[in-house]
Length: 367
Image (cartoon, rainbow, N blue to C red; front, side, top):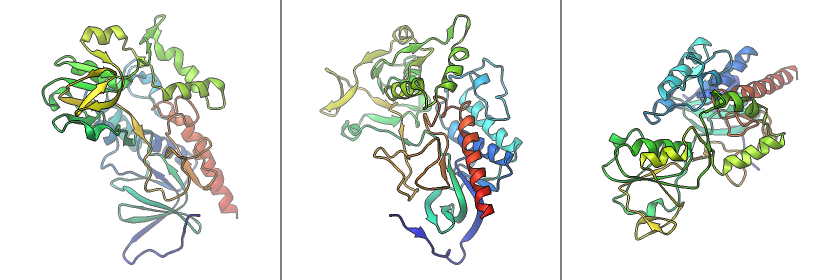
């Protein structure tokens, strides 16, 4: 049983009240904000960033979307680029910032959520020293939260420089010497290819397969995007894609031949260390740098509600949390569709959740 907040705010604490709070001003939070505004909702979007789009600006310098611009727009505003263009990370960041400005979305930047509790008539959220009270909350912090680092990382020799892909910027920012990239998905393969231009690189992880950038004269996503949007968790295909995604996404436009030609050497999965050195299968390697391209895991320590499963992920139905009426999520990986966590796919979930929020607000107003 969790505690219901009944205390009054401390003297001097600023209190703001809204019908709905949206936590996160990335693609999920902005899409929800657009949909709530269309429904004349009373809401505010909270973000721990100082500028919209900064979570993209901090990613590695050469990063580009693997979805073309035609499939990378949020609701009401197509991505401003030729349809086949693969946007870089700064273009995405600037697009998100312009999106918030165009629709005049109500933002509170620099407001890091530190505690969310159930209250007598809804929720209380503390962020940036302000107490926010609301009937409903939409958590839109996205799929990329706390970097997942293997437990063996602290056992590697101290002279091996380690970093997660979220900290990687470019080859010049790393110490000289060979690099072991751990994790052979799209991020790992892209970073390995870039590093291989100037140094020895090992790529550790299972082969996740490859999809060509183009097929039958058209971009790959012209074929797969319609399928992905129809692949919901209510369909067998959607459930199969989710299960397949847990084993690693196929490489988009990076054939095995490209890795080999660049000099990237495949090695087995890294599962242990020997005398402080990473052991990939029967090989013991001596890298100067290890880049962990091992993904992310849920990170919700500020949500003080019993809604999480054993892996730390929220229990929900299409983003609606049955156990806590008024609490919702948007932007989760495979939230309902195979495209749920993608820039061009989050809009459908945002519309669904915003409609549920609007209906509940109308119901509460009628009581």
